[in-house]
Picture 1 (cartoon, one colour):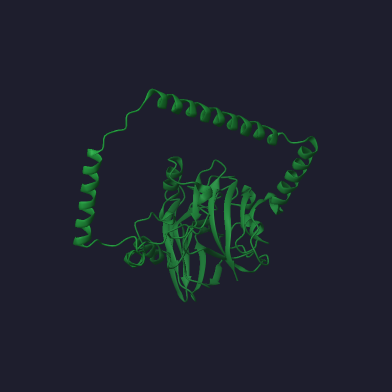
Picture 2 (cartoon, rainbow, N blue to C red):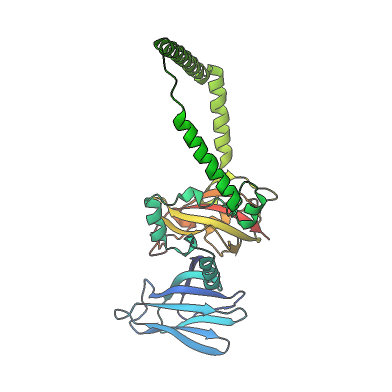
Length: 356
């Protein structure tokens, strides 16, 4: 099952957090932890109300049990409410997963022996990158399956067919005849004059080859010497191209346009499907989704980190960008342990597959 996004909820004492589940989802590896400031030293419980039934997800006691881990699966159409009892603030954090990811991952595993990168942990992916087995920049590129050459292709190709016994015997007899005739033939005597002529021809051919190579090398040198005016124009053009490729966006987000895409640009409120690779500035990959089902979310509605909402707006279908997102527009001071440290600047290579 692949990581789809970060999920977090801060539950303040005396407050409730209610909603109707729009689409079934699962929150995995949910960690419940007491807030930074304690109101008392008594036990505080997280209560989840589903419909008209209440359930205690976990109970935390300061200095005794300040963290617990649980999994939550919520179904479309359910009315849910989170609240606490006990007076202390509690933080819930985990990995957001769409329901049905398990089934799609199993189908991918059954398709063949090829390693499904979406099923690997970030540590496994980083190890394969360190060993030179994966190039991160190549993961966004689409790869078509090579066509298999089957028996029907073989029948259509007249060069590939099974020999009959008569044809095989005929070929063997012909080979034996050629072998006998070659043994009977005596080598032609080589005279001294003939050897000298051959040596002279070879020497002349070598001189011509060296002269041609020298002329070609000289021509390449001349071609590489740009005129002063050409140099200035080339620098101006290069600077212009670089400027057009980089966008400085809200909140310090920098978008480097790798591919423009086609059609109209995506706008706030649209539902977008993305392929992506998430890395730290050190190059370590902490998350990726580059094949199979894209990661879908609604743009500009706070369903992802702010850097994505800002950096994806205006992209066209098939467009590719590299987003450099400061911590304030990502996971901030807390980070997203264990993969994303506090105050981390993140780098995402993204491709817009489709939007609705």
